[in-house]
Image (tube, rainbow, N blue to C red; front, side, top):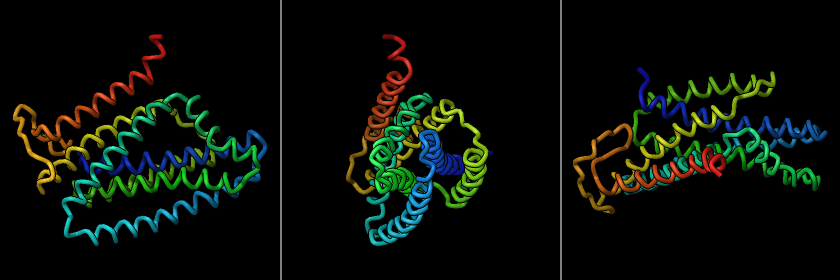
Length: 260
């Protein structure tokens, strides 16, 4: 049976890596469509630079964590809460792009200005930050994940995720295979929301242990550690707020227009 750590690790690296690949592939396709295939070299330089800069960010993050070892629980708590909020925001963004036409509009809006101005540096920066954002998010999420689960399962999930994404990337970039964006966005968004709730509960619990937050027991709430659910008011109310915001986001994306 697959562990929560493996599934969470696989989901993070799969989603972040595949989104970067989808962005690059969509920009390649758009450049071909408008006859700007010569700009592909700029895109290659951009995503390679983003990966290298991401490696430096990972080293810097490790150094920062070692410097703050004396305040480990505070760092762990804050990291988990920040990761939770970013995960939630990414999940909401994914839900909003679940329709193929919305994804196409997003890609075109990113590079249209750069192409119209013949500004290759602008195009470089657009791709660089689009890919680097995925790398930065991956580093943050894995830092939060490693605080909760064993590194062996996380490493295995990472390796399997990279392997699967590598195959899919080859099919997308070399064989022009299309991904069903609707199902992909919805499925990965669901996992991101679960991780967001888990990280939030864990982060608040860490800050409760050092006395930053109070601990008010609500014994009618079950304790489900792997999901970050704890029987306290301080963890339950923020998680409930996330669920309400999630419901509102799903309603806006899939049901509001149909009801108007």
